[in-house]
Length: 110
Image 1 (spheres, rainbow, N blue to C red):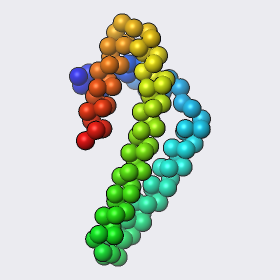
Image 2: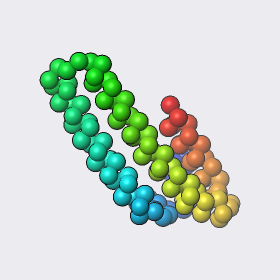
Image 3: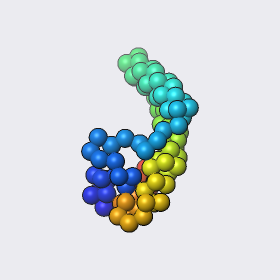
């Protein structure tokens, strides 16, 4: 299955780009990622200041959930555009996409 992650099921080559991206989704994800970036800097500052471990762990959990939220939105876009196009195309593209989706699900469900 490792080969499926090397070739995108939507047929996009080596410089892989999404088949389509909803502009509102892109902007929301960028805002979330900037917020997460700030949260991570805050966590680093907390560690440097030797803040209470439970408080730091709470912030780490918050960042993890925020990243999961971005991941869910990316998966939604991937299913809506890239996967849908590959599955409609049928043949080898569809099979590659099925493998890719399984890899994504198992990798990101941990």
